[in-house]
Length: 229
Image (tube, rainbow, N blue to C red):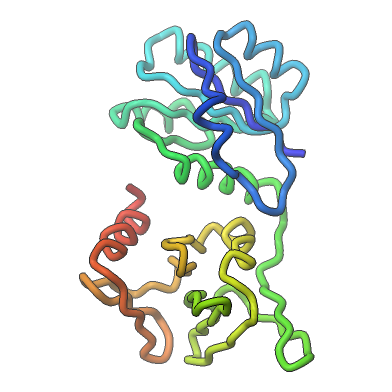
C-alpha cells in the first residue's frame, strides 16, 4: 500500500486532501502531520512513500530539514510545495518533485502518479476485447479516448477507431499507467506525447493527418499541461 504523508506546520490538511481520489487501481493511505516532531514519528514507522511538504517560505530551517529528510530516508520521495520563486532551490535541494502554490487536487494527483512511475514497471499496452477477441494496443499508438454516450471511441495514430461498449471512466486507469495520458475533460483522455501542435480550436497529432476539434477553453488548458504550468 502506498503511503502519502502531507505536512504543513500548524495546519492539518485532512479536510482538503481527503476529498481527492489519488488512484483508481492502487491502494493508498493518507497521513497528516502538523509539526516536525509528528512528521518524524510518521517517517520512522512508514519511511517508504511520498511526502508532500508544504511551506510558503524556504528559510534556512526548512532547507536543513529537507536536506536531513533526503539523506535519512532514501526510500522517501519528497514533493516540495512552495512559492514558485523557490523552484530552482527545490532542484538544488534534490527533492523528487516541486509544485508551486497555490496547488490543486489535479497537481497533487499528477505528483503522486509521477511517484508511482518510479516504483512500478507498468504495462505500456492497453488490452481490449473486440469482436470476441483480445487485442493489445501499445500506448504510443493511442492518440485519444473520446466519450460517445455510454461508449468510448479509441482513436489510433494510424487513423483507426475502436469503439468500446464502456464509459470513458472505465479507462481512467490509463492515466495512472502512463503519465502522458491526461483526463482533459469528462469526455476526453488525451495522449500529450503525440500532440504535434495546437490552435485555438484544433489539436494536431503526429500520425496520418489526425486532428481533434476542441473548445477554446480546453485549448488553453491543454497548452498549460504541455508547458508544465
